[in-house]
Image (cartoon, rainbow, N blue to C red):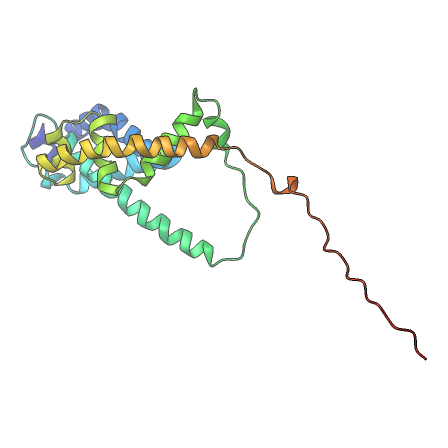
Length: 205
């Protein structure tokens, strides 16, 4: 299959898409939390895979690690573009906030509070640790496949995944405690006016 993909065989490339597009989509959604953006990531990943098909090496039983490496680069570039966009928007005049419909969907997910805490904790990991965790734990790639996707030694993937698991548990508990902390509205704090000083005026003689 590797050779057929390198040669630009449309049947082989279609088989590649059918076999792995769901894995790419699931990974993109875990990173972005956005369905539409994830679909864009899938499209860009396979467009890049077609453009870079001649770089596919005969390594492993499946091209999935190579494909996930492309997806990760697409996501990184998207993140840089998003940061530039946020900086540009910060310099623009303020607009009324538009409610995000995704919030309503998340509230319907069982144990949404823990899900939100896990997502927040995951975002606090270092980028490489987060990518290793998502590839190995969520996308179920082997250490060797994740190492190929990220261009890292297998030993580095193994050690950083172990460290990421421990760190993620700690961060998730912190996020959960923060979410469950009691909220005291500012309006509940009484504001008393400052006393007006009495001014004594002596009568004129």
